[in-house]
Image (cartoon, rainbow, N blue to C red; front, side, top):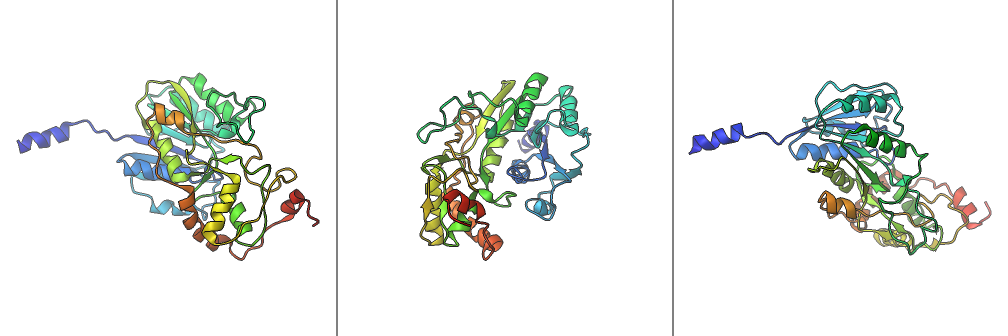
Length: 334
């Protein structure tokens, strides 16, 4: 019986697969390659993390690549040059492309057009939406995948190129990411910089606009669902959290975490230095939950603000805050 059991285990087909992650030099999606590769490795798979050499290697998350599991191969590459994979991949996650004619992107699309690939997962952006006229009031709903998109945006062009390529593709449209080892801090730092320094927080409009702020680990989990079995040749999915908050509420939550009173100044002139869109512009992950059976992680902005505060103190405490845009937006003389 033992021998039969051993033979059945040895002869059973392996469920492990090999992935390619194409990771940009940084910015709002800068930490996704790091978080996604760790998730792939934790699930027993292997991957190549193709990293743009234009990244600042002393900054996070790139400075932590040495801590990644051995099943992840980090391959530096100059993204101004074409890249032809030398290995066979089951899945691709493209967290770089914004121009289908660029040397790197065009070479990848040409390569995978003639290869057997289970799925090309493209990390696009919710910023490409072109909502219906009048959409964006404080009481309107979330952006829908059925809405039209701005044809002039680079990510829109990449999505269309993938759709026309016949490569099986999922396009994920994330919005406003924060998290450990992140590469772009402005979304929450805007609030912390002002509240922790007893400064007013200028917020456009009523402040009742809703923010879809998503932990990068949760985003990586959602992107990982691109490996779910599906017969759909092409589809798009919003990439966010169902745990949303108003712009004003974010300020009040941070005030509670840091033990400070909060002075919010709404209805400012223009946008000032505010890091989000002045109008209501947020996404929900309903479609990916329904179609790819993604189970949302129990990440929570209010809980995450506690460790974010400790991180902020290491990076920003005692540093000067640029208030020129604040003064202009609030109509205060410089």
